[in-house]
Amino acid sequence: MTTDEPAATEREFDAMLARSGLRVPDDRRAGTLAGYGDLRRLAELVHRVESPEDEPAAVYRMTVGRP
Amino acid sequence: MTAASDVVELHELSVAEAGALVRTGRLTSLELTENAVDRIARLDPLLHSFVLVTADLARSRAEQADRELAAGHDRGPMHGIPYALKDIFATAGIPTTSNSRLMVDHRPEQDSAVEERLRDGGGVLLGKLATHEFALGGPSFELPFPPARNPWDLDRFPGASSSGSGAAVAAGLVRVAIGSDTSGSIRGPACHCGVVGLKPTFGLVSRRGAFPLSYSLDHVGPVARTVHDAALALQVIGGPDDRDPAGAGVDPGDVTSPLDAGVAYLRIAYGRDMIAGDPATSPEVLAAIDGAVEILRGLGARVEEVTLPPFELFNAVGRVIMAAEGYTIHERWLRDRPADYGRYTYQRLVPGAGLTAADLVQAQRVRRQLADTMSRDVLTDHCALILGSSLAPAARFADFPRDWPPPRAATATQTIVANVTGHPALGVPVGLSREGLPLGLQLIGRAFDEATVLRIGAALERCLTPTLRPPGY
View 1 (cartoon, rainbow over the protein chains, first blue to last red):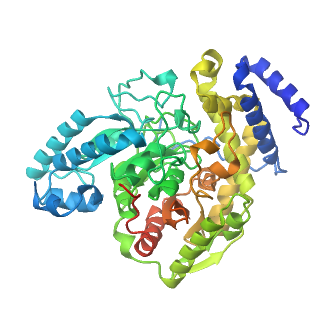
View 2: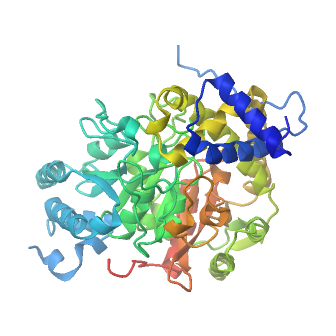
């Protein structure tokens, strides 16, 4: 997924809305699209090369003493 | 009127000072409460820090607190002390709106964990405090309640979502307010309002009954006028809660005894490069933090500059996780009732629908790396890390456009670092800008070592800002 081109970002945005069943009111579209583009830019930063063994922070943990 | 209230302004008393007077019978909780209710009535119509004042309930609780103390029943440091809660914390039978049209009629059946603990600790609930919608959004004039204003300049933003908490404490309407902090919403208002804000270690203070924004980033903690008051509040609200899935089962311990121990020989890290390298950092903020560092060195601490992972990586991890979790929480309402959200909240929540499973898992993987790096490379050899809080003085409301996002300078902070890693972080004031606006820094500590960041904060407070109070309050 790329966010380099504003038109491509807008197409992705519209596809995302269709998939999610969201209907963004026209007068809120600009700010929502801007937020989407910014979030996609940030999301690309977390796709760094990792070892397969690098576990996420949210790994589920069983606790002694709980059923 | 008692002898004590003849010689001091009651709102200037700290929690410890007021508590001591109440315990010796020189002051009553009811007097403290009436003083606060009166100040709110006089000062809050312009400030908008409270969305609800529970005056009758407060009087009733204050009278009970006085009766108990007279009978020798002392419930602890908050006994008889008025406090207030951000309006995302459930209060049984009392409206809890999250400042949203979606919840404007909501009256919870049960109290949040922090309300339970403060009530059981003899505290006096004064009311509910202003928040951005669902602790997200931004300053907005289209919600059920107007945004809180900064008592240092009513045309300015008081900081992020625990905005009423920062404003009310700074204005002397309440000594302790409980806020929530997902990316800095306790420390930001503390910084912009010139008060103290503590984001405890993830899991130390129960989140039960706080309307969630992000399950793995939300923290609950106190905003207070002094470090000592924040420490006292933590002792009451902290500790195990089996009903918080993220509860760590840890007690905060005695965090007040070390407050006067000073900082001699402490080894403290300083992330100066991260602060100076951010284009949004105001030179005044950097100079004020440099000045605080020199004070700590003068007190005998060994403060050393360290290199940290890029801020943008912390920010990306935090924002992706917050967007994914926040969207999940609001998914149905976003689909069914979009017009009931404020513009900013809506525009910040909907983009979360565009994240992939891999985005979220990758963010959680990098999060573990960042947390490990913080623990291993920074906080093993150093007992705390100094970073920026808000990177510029408070912005004007006029700086916020109709649609999200505002200019970065209006909201730039480094607070999300400690939400991502989960370490405790204390926001403390470090002086005023040329325009007379508060500046601050944050002290990030080792996991569950709130005592040390509070100790360092207390040392700075003694040297820097013992009595910051906005003019007119």
